[in-house]
Amino acid sequence: MDFLRILFSGIALILDILQWTILVWVILSWVLFFLRNAQFRWRHRQLYMVLEQLNDIFERMTRPFLRPFRRWLRRFDTAGIDWSPMLLILAIWLVRQLLAVLEARLILSR
Image 1 (cartoon, helix red, strand yellow):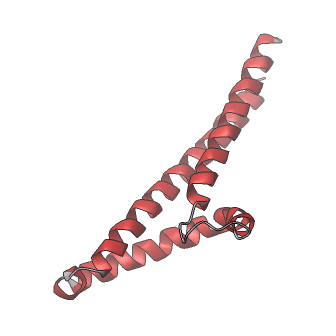
Image 2 (cartoon, rainbow, N blue to C red; image 1 turned 30 degrees about the vertical axis):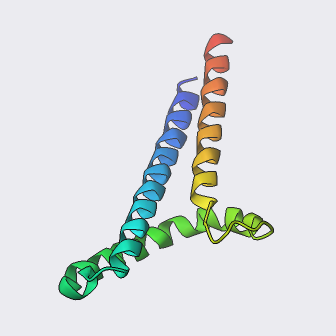
């Protein structure tokens, strides 16, 4: 039973890291969107380039997890809004709830 607890806590940790990575990437992409339309990128060119590189890193980290949701959302007209991060966070929440129920049932069955 200790092995299963360690396994569940490891999966929960991975899901937490993925969720925070997605949230940081979404916020960073919003900030970059607004900075592109402002004079910031011309006045603070080096800081803007660092932010772009961070955005690229976070996007490359999340792209494999977002790809199935983006493929599924192509069928619908979403008016140019990318809903895949929100759907992935919802899926992470559902998996986390399922893990909590499974762990509780395993503890109670002992």
